[in-house]
Amino acid sequence: MIISRHQIIKYIIFLVLLISITFFFIVPYFKNIKKISLALQTEASSLETQYQSGDDLEKAKAVYEYFKDRLPDLKTIFLKKGEELDLITKLEQLAAQYDLEQSLTLAQEGETVGGLLQKTPFAFTLKGDFTDFVGYLDKLVKLNYNLSIESLDLKQQFDGEIIEAKINGHAYWLKI
Image (cartoon, rainbow, N blue to C red; front, side, top):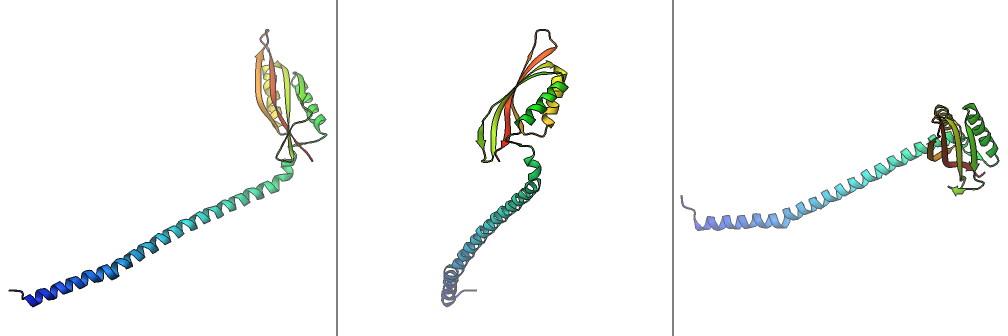
């Protein structure tokens, strides 16, 4: 079987037509489809980010609602101006309950924090038995006041049974 010249030219023209159709029509369509695919991926990523931020917004709203309902309870842990004597009295009663010698130093003014709060430094010095001191600290933590202890320095006295504890920290007061 011999292929004639005429058939070879026909096949060459057909092959050229196929290649030209591929380059002029099919390749641009594939490029267009690729652009659309990239745009869809970008949009999906954007929508996922928006969904996550909306989810974060829902979580923030839930936390806000939780604290909004508890706000009256949270206000009770902050002292109000003029309630300094209540705090000092409770601390003295606590020290007496555990047979500890106590000296208190509470600053008159402190630094303003967050607009409505005042952070006032305090210092306690306690002398007594170690187990009494641990009981004092346990009750101090359970008091309904917002006290933060920044340092605790324990020293044992010469007789071995008495310790001296120095506590430094801050009390938080409502400025209203």
